[in-house]
Image (cartoon, rainbow, N blue to C red; front, side, top):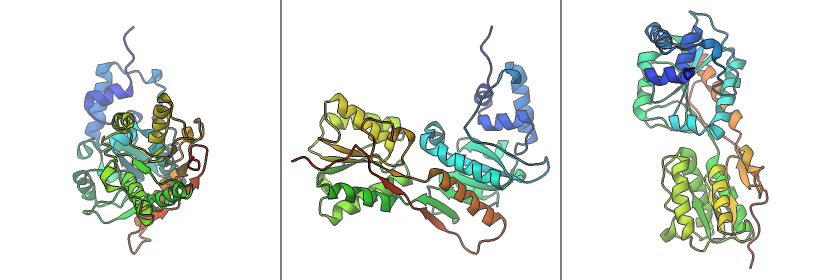
Length: 342
């Protein structure tokens, strides 16, 4: 028996996202007729059998409540890296889906590498929610649609619209001050600050706290590189092999923090007895790890829900101005941090 053909196979064959394929095969709105015909033709050619498919793209409910000719969909755009690294971003998408369902709208998810103009019927959308760092040319293309746009965790100087972030700067400032209060003075930041707006703001918060206490050593800033979390792992692993004297590490997110702890364990470095480690985001693994991870809780689903509210307010003409919204985060103290041992 040959290998079963999936929606992803069709998407790869046509060079579009699997969400476009799924909606086309399901006869849902938001896809151009010519694109739908290409999907159906490719499905027949590849031997796709819908009865064999039990694919769940994400854990969110997609209650469309749309009619064929009704403009009731929201386009959600995210970088491919965020789609692949869905531990954090998936929760935000869950929040978007929940908000969209509340307003009885439909949702189409696409990555920025997809050719929007070639596969999407613009008339089917009331607005766009962009998640994470999207290239300016893509945003400018979306701006031509002349529908409301909300940006999550990103700002673009060429696009004036509503934006929403976690309060990364203040939270990182608070977290670093907490470590300083425990007696730590040799503290390093772990993460590529150019990876996302969140990482950059968390680094700024760390730097400000260190500068306030005159503890920042500019000559030994941590040169973490990598366009993905996995690439950052490699740089961090190399740095840990020749790590300078430190008593605490402020990691840009929980995934990096958990990786650091695992590598320190391999080197027989005790956490927190020898080095305290903190994360950011409060993903599920942060409280299942050993030791449990001190981190910042980011209200991820609330970010998604609030983005939908901002969009709906634009659609309904209820806004006289655009907003930059910062949602408050919470410091969660667990077992990966402790006072400096003299």
